[in-house]
Image (cartoon, rainbow, N blue to C red; front, top):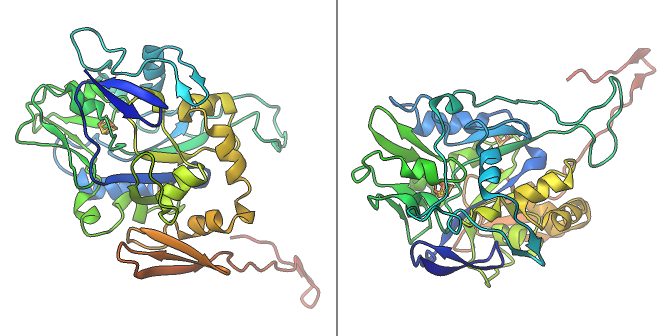
Length: 376
Ligand code: SF4
Ligand code: SF4
């Protein structure tokens, strides 16, 4: 075991290898408040990458309803049960990670889903938690009755559990962009990676006999384009880009701004210790205790900042830039009432108004003596 630094835990931790950080690290921001669970991202990914034999059940991108939705069944409940209680003190995680809690003869603490667990990707869809009387108006925040949508892909972790567990050294993390890939020629299908990934984002192909996973649309990333799940997103909830290393912040970089400057986007289950690189704006209406277990101790601050976005031109501007271009936005700038996005060379990619004009129609037309109901 090597001692490595994990900024999401606020401390060093044990990892099986002395893993240097990549030169660049691909990262995403997903805003859970805007996801409508249309599954367009899921289908865009499926049609692009997992339409082959043995891949029928695979969803490298999936969208599940929390708290009762999972893919595979119960993945995070099992993870939490295995890790056991773990508290945070002043931003430092005091529990054990999947590496630190590994059995003596293994590198990672994990579990292997049954075939049946992969068979119900939409189980728990739109099933709310909490109770209320029929006809009650749910107005308070957080809501008494709640659910939210959690879109998930491989996190292209800084310290991948899948990589640590592979006895064949078939999984590697690219130094040029931090993308985690399975070398299909080395993989022998032992599925140690499936067992190890805390997010259950490696899947076994029974036809090829190898493990497969989200490849971060690397042919697109290499061309400066955002991934399929991002460019297809109907709710415009997503950004793909690169996050600066710990201790460095580029305030003009959208990912850095959301994760490190305004801190509205948080990692998913940071207590795993893998340093996942998909960052989520937590839903504002769900119970805070639930959210803190899922996104760590920064939840209150994130939601407070996020709910003031209308008075924060840069935060508002980034929300308007989500889904505004298929290119990776490396820099952004607000000029008056317009936000602009730039590529790596500083060339303007897109410019969007901060506020879209809205028109409120009269509800009654006196001339025609008719109510103008909005039926769209
Ligand atoms: S999310 Fe899972 S599959 Fe993806 S890099 Fe992390 S450990 Fe590996
Ligand atoms: S396409 Fe976007 S809005 Fe639709 S389910 Fe996927 S993440 Fe949510």
